[in-house]
Length: 261
Image 1 (spheres, rainbow, N blue to C red):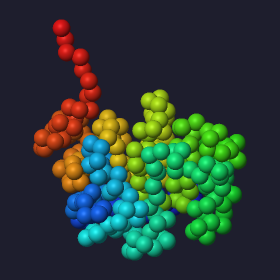
Image 2 (image 1 turned 180 degrees about the vertical axis):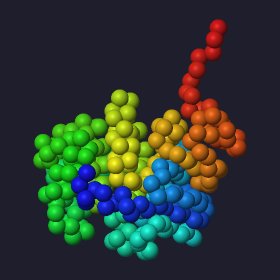
Image 3 (image 1 turned 135 degrees about the horizontal axis):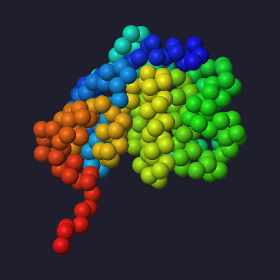
């Protein structure tokens, strides 16, 4: 492993969110949600559609207006100011729709080069090649357009774009929900391998309890914009939960089951 890849592992960062509130036209989409993510931990946020889980991620990275909140990175050398360029380099996001999040008229090369140019990073050539290799695509995809890629390949490009600044915290907004089941497994395995390799901290939103339980160590359950409970993945798998809503969410995740005759 090269020295530039080892460096980020030594500087693992966590995330602290306290009293996060997001309001749209008087409606509280997120209501005083708090949680801590330890450096190197994979943390999940689950809930039904409209529970506010994706809005939490958007508020953390500045894409949704937040009020009455403290959002901070934790760990040695963590940038103190959330609005600073240094903070934004450490926190990146992968969106749900890999086609919608990539500019249709830009090549993969330009998509990956843009964040480097914004942050004034000069070794673009080496970083682009490394990023494509890390997500299992290679330089042959460098000058293709998004419409020339499959859904799984587009999401790999989205992951490469998020990682090219070498962040320590990755926000994942249902990163596999738009993909076929077989491709979902490939992308999830890729994300877990990258987390282990780089010592990344994950905050992953999903409505799929099986996916989150597999990838995450702890989960925050949300309902109608509020935090219901935080539970370890092992406890969720063993049905050791406190809230009735969490139990109903687990039951719903089993899907339709035909009654026996």
